[in-house]
Length: 73
Image 1 (cartoon, rainbow, N blue to C red):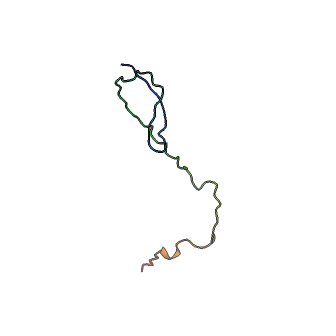
Image 2: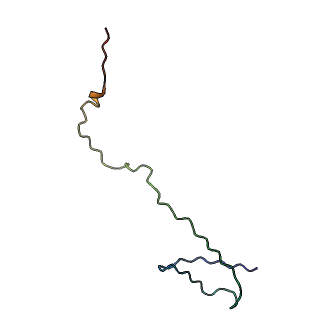
Image 3: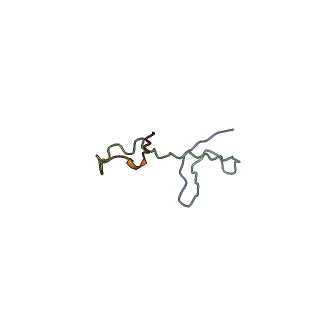
C-alpha cells in the first residue's frame, strides 16, 4: 500500500479538490480526512491589568449598614 499525504483547505462551497496525486486513473484508493483542532483564542490572564482605576468615594465607609453591633448587658 502506498501512502500519499497532503494538507489543504476546504473551499467556501465545502468542496475538497486534490490535484496531482501519484496514482493511476481507475486505481482504487481510500480517503481519510483529519481536521486540525481549532486554536482557541487565548484569554487574557489578567484582563484588568493596565486599565485605569477610578475611586468614587475613597474615604467613605465600606458596607457600614451591614455591620451588626450587639451591646450585651
